[in-house]
Length: 438
Image 1: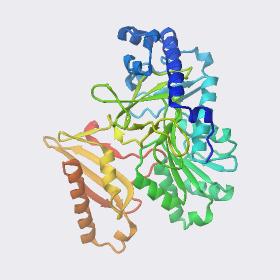
Image 2: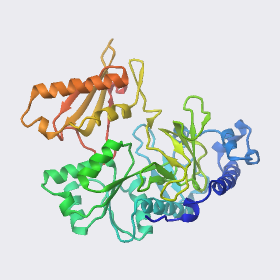
Image 3: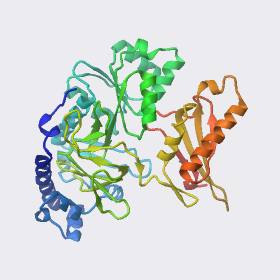
Image 4: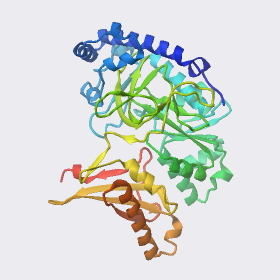
């Protein structure tokens, strides 16, 4: 399996730390002059580049939050003149103004570099045909993977999302060996193939899938690999940092390698903000060490994970992050109990009779307590023929397992296959009606 940039991906911990500290000091010195936000924040914290004597001193620097990015929408986070910004991307903005990401030409070069590392870690080479099912446009996924696959010399099919039957035709006709898209959409592709009577393993040449933009579990990996006949790799990225290209799994699937010469990772206690060590679960924080257009210091991602610094069997020495375990800001407070959707997902995926398609419906009637319904699709053989008693028994079994895990009770509703609405991008897993205006 190729390592795209051995100089940085296999650098010693000592040399990496020296490089990171040098780049961090340069970053702080620059934003103190070019960013009104950071000039104020650094002054309030009473810290300058000269105060950074070691990497541990990064804890002296202030955090940056998504609210601050939205407050400075659209161009307020840029530290270069707009004429030097050659591209803009943005998040979906489903909870307010979108988060904007700006790129200079140097930023785009850096993005191509880290994406080349990403696709190389997933064993993609110039011999591959990459069917890119990530969305193109303001979303970073499509163009991010596009430039990375092109950088390693692969043939790229810019399919984007949607028109799934046509995508299956193109994958077969063009001989796609790699599929890139959200994990949810990969299952939509598998379902569409089954409905059309297409044997993916027989008719397609897929060997690798690179999936991201939403959390997914090991159970879901098994489902995807079994359905599509490929080796599934997880990736991680944020519009705020660069897009995809922050970290990726290698073939050992023992964590996602962080390209920490460009994105410095930390784990903090989400409540106190205090730094935590390797091997401890907490909130993931990133600092962009080399971004020109929109550098960010200590960005609170709200993602919960664990960092590891030991060398990987693949030869890479960069820090690895575990799969995202959940988020600190999508935590649901239900009848006074903290619940993460990922907890519910792990329970559901523990049942072989259930499919990896579900929704969590939360509601609250007038003068009533919160109610939670979990809609989850069952396997085909549960409904052919329909055995009501067996379905009800399975619902009760899942409800009992959820109560053991969450402490609170949930109502489980077993759905027929393909009855939960599919998404061409990120799956809508939680519908919280408590927050909807009547």
